[in-house]
Length: 273
Ligand code: AMP
Ligand code: MN
Ligand code: MN
Ligand code: MN
Image (cartoon, rainbow, N blue to C red; front, side):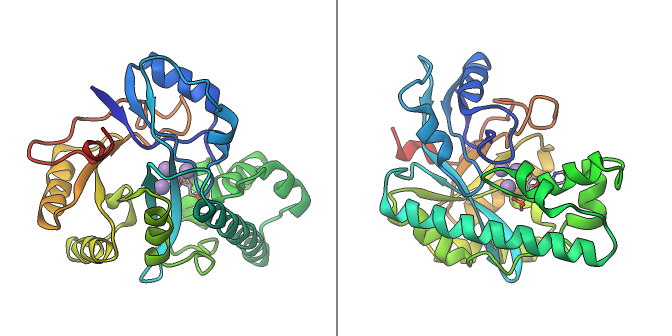
């Protein structure tokens, strides 16, 4: 069975509409799928009941939060989009995003970048984030690529890395759990943690009520999968898989192109069937 439990639509920083995303997921042969936009469930309000045959859609969201002053991401799977808890979470995260967006712009202008606030805010839509700023900097010739924008201005530890707006990990786990969902630690190798710190994160995540970890996230090498398998086993976490698809021109994150879970790891989706 092809499973992909991490993807983005244009309700956050993805390129495809929710309907297009479902159609592409179906074409890729995905049978169990989740749209996990950053801090919003708007895609689920747009889709309604128009879901392709043979595809099971699990409601999901990717929440930004902090752990030890670092921003990390949690995927909430099987949350209830209509719940009051999720409405509260979406509202709080939306406010945090807007406030953070303005702070990032302010900081970047202070170091000499040229930004038209109104234009950038208007282009950013409902879920303003760093990718919108990267795109703007590229379009205005201030960087050579979006990647360059992250490396120089927006990535972890850079001027535009504003994280004090996000709730802590405990709170994000509570939102997910209280709305009937399961908290999954997203792309654990993207935070640049040492092995020791990664173990500490997994332990605290588990102790706070987290249940699963992305053992497979996009394209990764066998050593990376082996490390994440060890983390899952050591902390008794279920395994999830996700491409983190954003758009068709990123070959490292293609819909449904994810390795199967390694042997001995219980799939998080066993909870939903
Ligand atoms: P934000 O939600 O504002 O924190 O932005 C995070 C998003 O930026 C991630 O979900 C990715 O889609 C994108 N992103 C993160 N790092 C990079 C990078 N180095 N190059 C391009 N895009 C990135
Ligand atoms: Mn993203
Ligand atoms: Mn993420
Ligand atoms: Mn993501």
